Amino acid sequence: MAIKGLDQAIDNLSRVRKNAIPAASAMTINRVATTAINQSSSQVARETKVRRKLVKERSRLKRATVRNPNAKIIVNRGDLPVIKLGIRMLGRRPDSILKAGQHRYQRAFIQRLKNGRWHVMQRVAGKNRYPIDVVKIPMAVPLTTAFKQNIERIRRERLPKELGYALQHQLRMVIKR
Image (cartoon, rainbow, N blue to C red; front, side, top):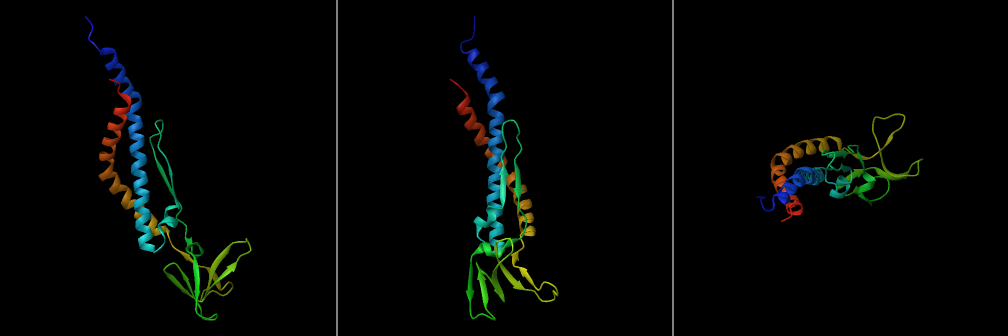
């Protein structure tokens, strides 16, 4: 006497083991990594007073797959040139103020460099040979601290919940009745 539906149940269990669990874990890892990028970018944008879009485009996500369940977040921590913020000149020429976003720079000006790019330059006191320098916003420290804080916190809080949702979704797709 054979049990009714036993073959179907065995097939479902093998499909869950082979497909559903790895797919759910990859999906969860990608979601958690995306959340970490979004929250860290927002935090850095608030701290540095730079648009969130400019901060977010400095980080990329190498997504997790079923075969390789590791996500990699790659962040460009270099200084952000002020020209990216959009600029306005306020006042008369010699002592003019250049306004970029919410930042103001005394005695700054716009200049086209030898490589063809436009940059905001500023006179730097104490430099003898080249007394002008490109104006930049330092991003390395805020990006590093924000990503380290948020990745650990989000992994603790969101990973179990997201894994439950992803497993339910995968089981719904895989199991045949």
